[in-house]
Length: 121
Image (cartoon, rainbow, N blue to C red; front, side):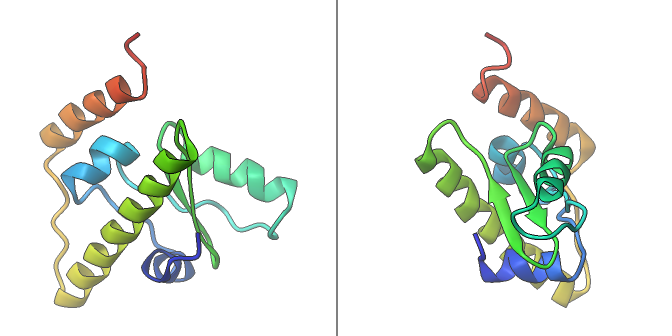
């Protein structure tokens, strides 16, 4: 997608740390920024996959966000969650303080994310 807040973060060259519980539970944690490559190129695919890792979303520099899911609906829901998270992050940055989630919470929520992805089948 080319959602405004996620795109703004990507243009700024930022990543989004784990700041919201639902972000970790449904996206898999922080939202990484891929390395830049030309749109439509194999290099962009490789860079996006490398930054995506085991998560469901990645920011594409100077472009927007890419998300995945088991269905198109799931992928779209992840896109909506990325945009919500990006809005919260931009607002927190504007207020001058971003408090990441505690490491213990991230660990528990990532385990739940893995279970939701079918990692414990």
